Length: 178
Image (cartoon, rainbow, N blue to C red; front, top):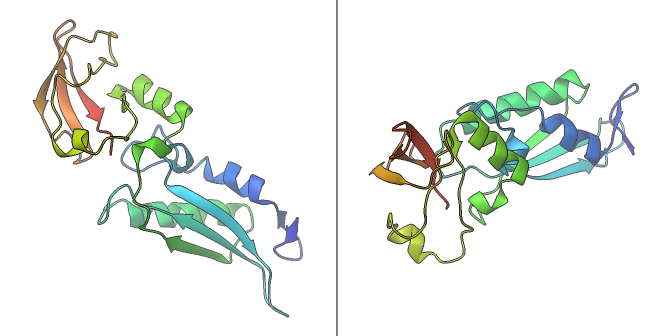
């Protein structure tokens, strides 16, 4: 345990837990840890007379993601509420973020919210370069049917595609694997 001020002490595990309460601004039902944006939490030993620093490494879901500034602000605000004021946020672009980093709980939360989570691991890059509707059945998050149809490669954000269920006729976003 590292003392971060005269009154506050925290462990990396506690910080991970606190960060689990920071929701993604575009999909507020999933945390930045469940989404896999937070890559690392470090406690840095303070120099004499200085407060210890907490370094949080984050990776944007894609370069230029407009939500990253808000996510950084929310991370800082969340840690401030727990007495951590010396927070250093590091942006790491490599390796690039992948939907493989999403937790199973995060995927469940997406489905419960009405967004179909990625239904395959990102193993073969050809599926990303030439996605085909017939490659994998996208399951409707509303009724569970796999009788779905791609409407548009781009949904409410560029990381999602728009689908329509042929069973319940409801449209839904699919979080594309990448």
